[in-house]
Image (cartoon, rainbow over all chains, first blue to last red):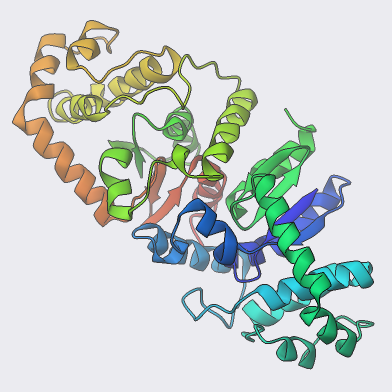
Length: 198
Length: 198
């Protein structure tokens, strides 16, 4: 199964903390696929940023607060804080996926924690490599990789492919040809995995 | 607790089939409150109809099909069929709530079934009263009530009040000052009721 997320999406972060456990309970593996919700997808959909949508924005703020209380999460960042440009993080992920694939998911987890839990802004590739990284990942090779054509081309292709598959929100999980959108849909996803679909 | 829904919302219909059972399991009562998502709320939000939103529309169609399979539902109507104007149904509900309150929820359940499961278009008040109604509800009194000032004024006030409380989608459940939006959120709602909040 595939887990699509945007590094600047709080609900993507919440799902990232649970998705591999959910999959493992049902004998599944998860491929992580960062995408660019605000940078690309919402423009295709003709929508403004979710937190700026009347009524819905307020709901999302309360839902985030409720989710944090329910799961005992402490975040240094609020959804209303200025949002970083997530492209450097996404390019770091795809470069690592190509050159040290076993470190790609740990890198995404570290970057997600550094952004949401620790409050670091990771728009700048120099900041990404200056801080905590998974053991074994070479910071200078990663730094060069983030700026390379390979990562840029791969990221663009992945975002296009995600939209081709119908992904329009973060988080989205794809399994058995079905999409499950939103942290709210993880319960239905578990039901799907437990029953083997329906 | 309060259950907000639009008669033309398929997800509102799906939730209507479960919400009273969920509440009863936790010793709660549910007040039903029809609102006008397409007619009023989406305009305030600056959004186009959900099924016409690129990517999201396709997702919603697949989610509806998945929900029908999962719960063994047969509907005569598709979400892509022309949508009725839900105002006559909503006015019928609020008139009944004022004049025969114990029949209001049964009326809403009957109208929801007639629209989605049986495929009737109920935009015309004459159609509403010509077909199946809860026992004890006087069709001619209801017919006059739908066109009266009382129902129109009450419906307008209820829609405004729902937005004031932050409701922007169908279904939405309000309990203990919290909102739970979407049929996907019913699992979290159950968790909330079981724990008495968090």
